[in-house]
Figure (cartoon, one colour):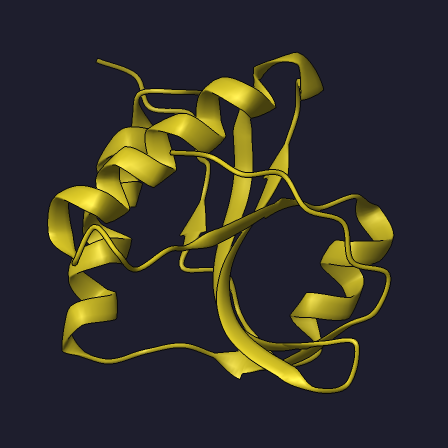
Length: 116
């Protein structure tokens, strides 16, 4: 189930990586390869408003109209791999947000056109 929330201050702490996270990244990569609308994806450790720590999926998209559908797909992929009581925050990055996240985290997914 998706919940929308607003936060004004996000500090990117670094890439979230480990065995479970690599499985999640692989599953998300498969989904993103089916959708040319995502340019890059990041899985990052963050701190919200100076106190609350979490993990988030940051997506740089080409078509903002698809963001709701993408968020739902990412939520389903996460729920299929992990405890349904856990959650994954998803944010849609603008150019400034991507510049900020890149200072501490590299993308695990970058779109490249594929020809069959």
